[in-house]
Amino acid sequence: MATNTDLHKGKEILFSDGKKRTVKPLTIKSLREFMKVANNMKSGNEEGGMSDEDIDKMVSAAAIALKKADPELAADRDALEEILDLATFAEVMAAAMGNADPNS
Image (cartoon, rainbow, N blue to C red):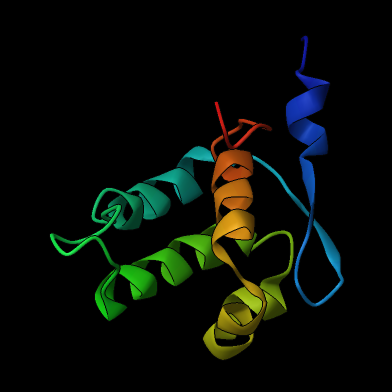
């Protein structure tokens, strides 16, 4: 059986704590949980900003995506919020969805 080795390797992402973590595409089981959160995320509210609720959803989605890459970090929301910025979040989401380039 042929496998897609690029997907199995995942995407190495540098976080603001200086640590690199390899994020792999989500399994179908994890994808179900992830999509419940991701489908409720908004790109911004009517004033053009993000609400605390939007940020909470982003952190929850990132935690799901990082469960296998760094289970300890995924379980610690405060620590995750400290090292997650918007650019890194976009990279994590792209890698979790199986897309190495967050801009595509």
